[in-house]
Image (cartoon, rainbow, N blue to C red; front, side, top):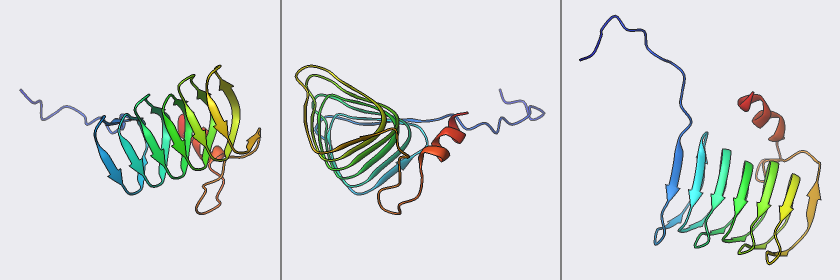
Length: 137
């Protein structure tokens, strides 16, 4: 079944992480893959890929990611290196730093928005945009 002579594939496949509805997590999460949140999370999220917060999803804390589609609720700062998409059911209360933003009619946003700047790691203040671009190239 296994071929001992077969070369190992050292390429790491990005993961897709899901926090399901009805799940409550308190703590910090870092992933090199993508993440979908349909439950509740309190803490810091650092996603090297795409973050999706579903309609039942709720995040209270700070977020750094490459791209984001938000349909649920966010309370806190969010930094997106490329595109932040706020869907019509989204509610965001906090500051945004992003390169591009799309806001559907019906989306609620309260806070400040800065576009075109470098996304920084909120806790350490380090530049994240350049690192994210290098990892996706």
